[in-house]
Length: 102
Figure 1 (tube, rainbow, N blue to C red):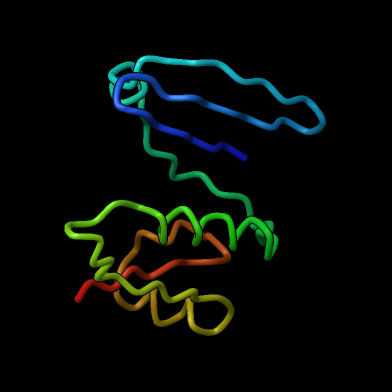
Figure 2: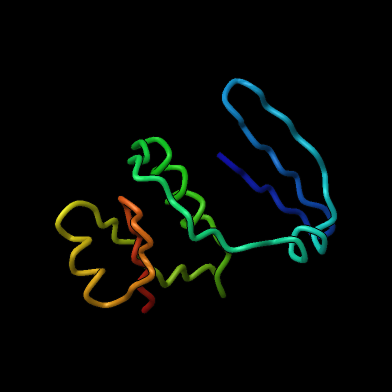
């Protein structure tokens, strides 16, 4: 699991690999420059704790005047068939989060 804690100039990256935890500080521009898109997913279902952590990070994201004009819909199981009708970008993920914007 990867967690990012950002400040204006530096970003703290904590990564948990099994029982090993490591933390390092990086320049924000390096994190942005070195980013990548992952399109390879396992068929393993994420835990409720992991899902809650992801949704909490989205909820805490900054917005203009703190309006937070988004809604998150968690799609799993049969609901994913509807996602596949709309886009080919699910890449086999077992859970999809649909972000709606008002």
